[in-house]
Length: 369
Ligand SMILES: C[S@@+](CC[C@H](N)C(=O)[O-])C[C@H]1O[C@@H](n2cnc3c(N)ncnc32)[C@H](O)[C@@H]1O
Image (cartoon, rainbow, N blue to C red):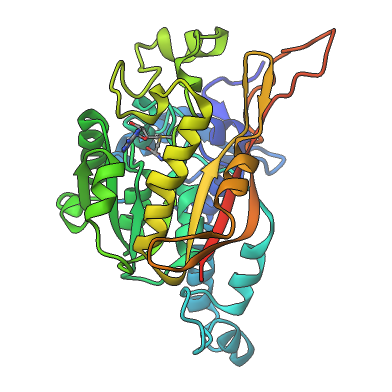
């Protein structure tokens, strides 16, 4: 019979809420020391894994480093090989980011896979309270491509601070605007507990309505804007089985606010919602953005009653080639698909009709010219 106290690599990864390749890296680094079966298979004791989970609560950023950072480590190891030396240099003409040519290329693929810590991870507990956060690791990928160290990043829908956390972990400076004080307070707490005491002081957290706050911000002052807006009022619909099981049963919020009129998720008319989002917020962000810099909008399509709403294409239609109030133009540069391969499949239309399991988000990438 299988010894339940000893887990194989896949089970250990599941227990920790990380990928199996992260477990391999942890073993290589000596963070985890599994035993081996007579056949040479690794076995991890539950006690050791729980011990790691407990300890990682207090260490700075025990999260999975993104691929660029692994390469940073390899760079040190390959120090003496001149060919490797050349590959690791950042081109002097590169004013956009700190990536080398070999790191730059894969980051231009039109898709990437969503990464998360897993809901059991100690550092996922604050994020979990918000009904629609994005993964700080996914936004970290974008920040590492679209900024250099020390640059300013704006998120006009800051939520529980996933953008701020990604900035804090990578020496960028975040300005986060969030309408609800409770989410903003959690964002600050998240940085303090998950990144380090005092970290939140290096970033700007504003509680307020982005429509108003953005008008007070200086033009040409931000190096990169990345955000995920409310997807109209999808959170306000009646809780389905999944929401009941995962959120209502665990006493977790299912919407951003109850009746706040400034909350974009409470606007009933879709066209009115789109106009406010595009003209009142995104074009204003574009004014604040420096020239030749980028903005990334992370959005998904959704269903509303019997309609399939292609939110991402509506946004592109409304934003592409629009003039900003400082006389510049916003141009679409690409749409990256963020694949959510871990989501469980639900039998929506079975056995009668095609009803899609929407398991991807779009990253709409615009540049200011
Ligand atoms: C999709 S969530 C963003 C989550 C965030 N990316 C994170 O990871 O925590 C959208 C956020 O926009 C906020 N929001 C809605 N209307 C707003 C407004 N007018 N001004 C600022 N924030 C607003 C909501 O409270 C919600 O937290």
